[in-house]
Length: 165
Image (cartoon, rainbow, N blue to C red; front, top):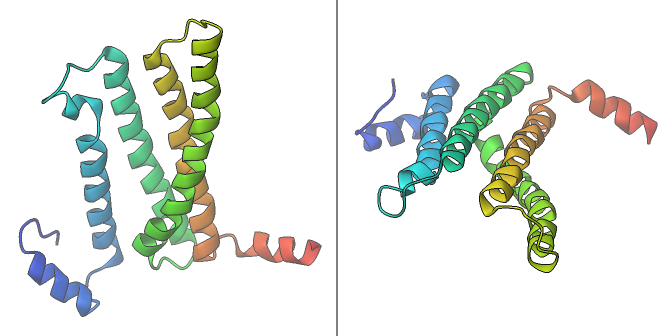
């Protein structure tokens, strides 16, 4: 049962290890959804400027990729030992996000330099959209891959890789 207000009862259940893994997954989805929405251009527009059509589409795209990515990673974890999904996503999410951020920089920085130095007609909206179109799927692809390793779903591949070395 998802607790929306009674955080102390949830804390006791987590301490006593009686919260089912699927319920923990639900909390993870909810906090991820909250994070994506609260950082979106559409949400921020409530206090700043009205988002462009590109920003709205990008917000929707990121939301869909995030929810799809989390769900596929959860299924991948189930293919393995079906334990510690939240821990794995949290810990593996940090290096995966760093990699995605580096990919974004590899796309964004040269394009900004070209835009400034050579007067290339690239709008900032397009540049941000392109960067995000590539970064978010890459992030969840990395998470899918590493959750598979951590859960043992890729154990046969790891054994074959170790034998080849």
